[in-house]
Image (cartoon, rainbow, N blue to C red; front, side):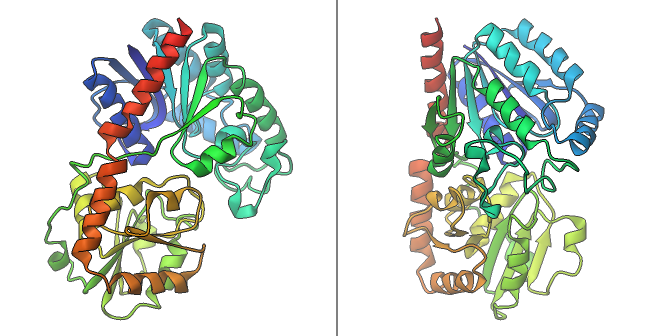
Amino acid sequence: MRILQINSVVNTGSTGRITEEIGNIFIKNGHESYIAYGRKALNSKSELIKIGNTSSVYRHGIQTLLTDKHGFFSVEATKQFIIKIESLKPDVVLLHNLHGYYINIELLFNYFYKKNIPVVWTLFDCWAFTGHCTYFDDVNCEKWVKECFNCPKTNKYPKAWVDNSTFNYNQKKELFTSILNLQIVTHSKWLSGKVQNSFLKKYKVNVTPSAVDINQFEPTASNLKEKYKLNKYIILGCANIWNQRKGFEDFLKLSKKLDADFTIVLIGLSKSQLKNLPKNILGIQRTESIKELAQWYTLATVFVNPTTQDNFPTTNIEALACGTPVITYDTGGSPEAIDENTGRIVDKNDVDSLKEKILEFIQYDMSILSEHCRKRALAYYDKDKRYMDYLNICEKMILKNN
């Protein structure tokens, strides 16, 4: 079997690592794996195909800003990519994030329709069935159920100066529901429920959680505590981009409520965010080193995820795999990663409850907590088990298509 995956990035960030690991599972089972990407790629075991270039990505971004028609540019880049698909002749295509200023969805889906190629689409957010946004729960918007209009989030990614949400919604609906042999994968029951209320409800939705390499994300010793002269208890937060959605402001508020026994460590901060941090917050820029991440997860007393919009954060299961309990806001599918032995759930933006749950955890036997967390990761979030689900889906779809 020859598979082609399409994602904005490869082997970097959560979606990029997931894409890479899925490819590795196919290779391990004797299949050919290709990954097409539009933005950034690190070393990969799959054969990589670049879509467009830096200039085409920038142009797509500017055109989106001016028109709010994200996903309808990168015409020449997509035409050239389709020529490569035609030559490759994949048995099945696995889609991931199509937003990201790098591909033309109209050309791509018309090609899929014409060739009747089986498609498996992993949704990491809600962009596929809205007229603009990736998430809508922060503004309590339900327009996407029937038809988007007067979008309240045009000033958010993918940012635009005008509103074309109705056009986007109807074009997406026509394109995305045209494929006969398509199945959807979501990593959370929460997102599955949203899909089943959208125009994509005609398709089968497979709910399978994302996963991690439990041989890399595992309890890992380090000298980080001594190196950085950290306090007794360490509260860890990780994000690719720290913004309001990811809870940066709430960490600043939390820092004022904790005593001298605590240090907050935030990984993934920008250079500007590193300036003027409170004394009890250690800021670290983004790292691609999984070993370093595993060391920080292991060292942490608790991993705190104050996200206010999310699907199924990979950081939660990375923490569990390293034996660290998780406290998360009641957001999207984020609470689905934990149970009563491995984490706690609090209401969004309730910083007092965050503190309360942190103080609760430090009363427990950390070795027992760590064992529960690691066991949960081994049982549910091992990539070698979970990503076999993709292989099984693809095999069944190909049989059905023949």
